[in-house]
Image 1: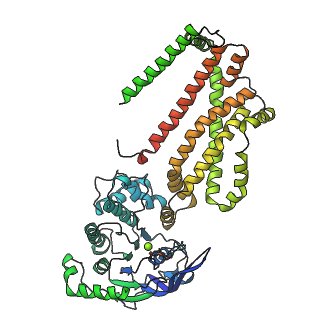
Image 2: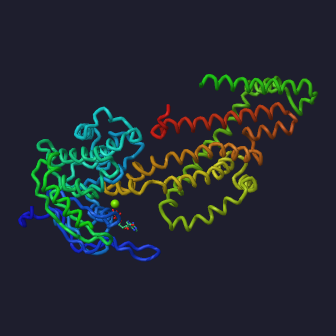
Image 3: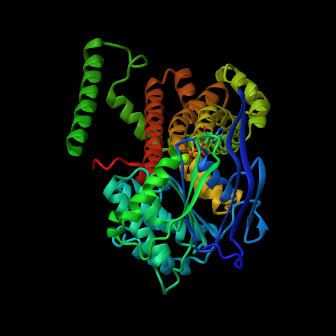
Length: 261
Length: 253
Ligand SMILES: Nc1ncnc2c1ncn2[C@@H]1O[C@H](COP(=O)(O)OP(=O)(O)O)[C@@H](O)[C@H]1O
Ligand SMILES: [Mg+2]
């Protein structure tokens, strides 16, 4: 995992984020430094308000850090990049667009020829298991289905990097576990076809979810967010349900729980 | 359900006509005060026959259409700029708010003096009266676009034009239609007010002529045609809205 020979895809140095508004300054992130390897699955956990979303927005090029630097594939990150897919906490779909049209949005923005769009979108529809729902509108979808559309939309332009901000936060526990499995199937374990393994950074506040999905977990302190702990998760892949009930899993969960405080 | 509504509508119209006829028969009003439904119908057929009704209707329709188009276009562009830029908002909003306290009826004569008794002055009056409600709706609609959807568009590297076309326009459409519905009715009022002040053609002009000649039946004809026109226009806007905003309809049907 930490082979120094491969260049990290993301390198974060002394990153701080300070918000200034009418009544003073609010330090959201404080001097974070870490790097992310290609094809790594990193989970970031921490108490709410500690700056997780802020961190993800910075990595997605949506927000400029107050201090520090972020390099993406060796270049300084100055704005949103096309090789990045973003999944927001709420599914963030356009209510006037059908499932198909929502998934096709990134291709439309990239001015892909419309005749080429259909097979690409259809492939994603099938990958997330929404065949038959292509023409449905977001208001008719369940939370889990809407989140699937959001994930398909983030993957349709085949990005190398996937940034997920508490993507399953609004789902019930069972749906949530199922969606985690599907995310692994689609973006990590999948082999062949055009779905190769992605670099994934996912924010969550569920410890078990982080351990089950990630190669590595970073724990942030309460605001201002600093790195409290950075642990590799050396559980075998593909991850299977029974892993959740092994002693290693339990020990990791306990360590992370104590780190969060 | 629907057919019952239509039947009720016919019953109420029939009731109105009967009541009207009874009033004429037993009230003993002179014709120039209250013509009977039959008188009005005859006058209607006459004006249709000699083509004058359609000529006047066409004038008013054109004024309403162009007034609406002009007012909605300007209000949309300005509303978008105001919604997107605090700077433009600070610069313009005092004037726009102040302009709302000017009664349009009072400045209509000025516009007729400046732009003549033809259609142009009516188009401008209609456009002015339409402007404000549409503007307010555009500002509200564009401001209400969720920040997360903006972040999504930025994360995709969307251009300003793409954000406008793919996000802001469809998101603001429901509120825009709210403004358009009000605007469509107001445009008719604006055009008729302009025609009252000074015109050589149009339904408002026809009302003036009828009044001058004590041809009250003609006034009734013009008023009924105006009402029908406003209703049809409103219906077109509502129909368009239902088509374009099908995604918004509640799933109760
Ligand atoms: N645009 C902003 N302006 C001012 N304060 C902000 C802004 N975005 C986030 N914050 C503040 O920064 C802190 C971290 O927010 P966030 O990154 O959303 O936390 P988390 O996702 O971990 O819950 C919070 O206290 C939040 O109120
Ligand atoms: Mg958050």
